Length: 364
Length: 124
Image (tube, rainbow over all chains, first blue to last red; front, top):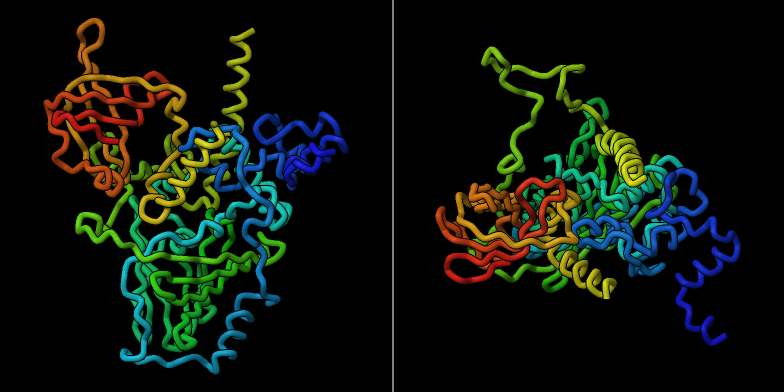
């Protein structure tokens, strides 16, 4: 009885699961041959050995494959605290609360000078077990998410950075460093090591582009207003990509809110993507003032090609002339593939299976 | 103990997520054998001080006396600066000793852990 009292919640869940379904449940993301057959276990923390999505994604560089994670159920609330049905309804409600917004002048703007660091990792699933992310997703995106978790467990990870892709919208939010505010516009800047970020937020009441000219963009299109010292932002036309909690579609719209409190720029973001989420997903944000002012650590413009080289699609042919590879040509790469990670993971799954089989064959 | 190690590694990883995160996770490390550490001693042929990664190239004499050029992947520039490495730290011809996780496909190269430079300092 005392042993039972000492069990933490995860161990208890594992024990109950084992008692309910026996050894069949012992299979987890690290040992399963076919994760698609384990659907009933995708919402079980033990299936991921209690790792959060972040812990799964960090296993590579931490050399921590297969280790038990430290995730805690409810460590960060992922659900939106609001009852709005859409991002636009959310934004309009806050605009109404602000009586149409505060019209700042240069003299009345708050002081957001400084370089900040570290958006909140909760936007990437936080410290909750990966199983809790699954609960947020529609069936198709549950499978995509678990496919990614399986690839991480097999050391077959795909990363936008690795292929010199842009980081996409979620990365531009997480890696924001400087907020350049003026009465009618705010620029958000960030400098990664292989790419740079910029967002334009229009606070001049000019609104979004007309519908005929709306199309997906890497960082979307952002409009906003001030409620005294708080900036509220609505973003639509976000290009579907992979990042944050999971991948997202062109339907994603978000509402953000930022306010400086001392040396911290506090914020929050709510994600509305009905194709992917069964309910809106929410994350707190916190950017702390960076205090290392050494000149050599200033942000800088970066290009992934500085060490990774240019794309292979455009090349010099045997005549010495610039040429392009077309569909069907060797080394052709489809730049319009909307989900290149899916192409990678599907081919990777098959290659990994053949590789495992060849090792087993040579061992026998 | 391994769980504790993971905790420390992850804590460092989260702390550096702001400026160093993108490069810290620039690409998968599955190409390296993180269970193994090897040490090589040789002379620098070139040092590439660039993002997303810095690279050190080192000539190492093998058992038959043949020079083998090793490719060593390092961290991005901001991380290297924070660890005291600048553009002049490694010069062609400098003797260096490199401790690294080797590539797991047998090619001469790896992901650095520490480098003892010609000035006698150890950089990580």
